[in-house]
Image (cartoon, rainbow, N blue to C red):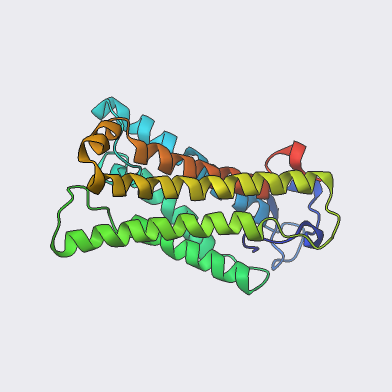
Length: 241
């Protein structure tokens, strides 16, 4: 199976842009169908796109409010959805094969970081000592690195092309990838700025905090990831060649 990035010139056309294709390792007329690389990219994109909406809406009847971050939903009734979504994305990234060393590296790093976010809960009580504090640092480190890999993948790998004159739709797709990549980096940077604000002006930090900025910025980063992967998975006919 293919990993994130391959230039459009390498792609073998699939009739009807099939999400399921006959298993190439089986023989006969009744070969089982398997999920194609386009289908896998599309699946990862939809999982990312719906994650912030699913956890927020699913937990709303119980709490009547947004949590401070998407990661905080680990400790709510939507914890299984949060962790399960990251496991789907993580295993997809780790198990798929790439087209060159950079594809392999980005996919495996993203997969490991996604699994790290799922396996290592955040420090929701802000305990400042012991394993819980360390666990919180590890969680946010994995989350930040995951988003950075997603952003760099969109900016530098998804935009690759074998031809000096890409098609108009390929150029349009590249614009989508760049917008998504920069949106992810901007969201992560703003989360960092908000964290620093706590030490500079605690009153302003608390005033802004009532609007759940970390949740919305994380949601923006996750949705940008999902859109980039849906475009790469050829989910939108108006962007396909």
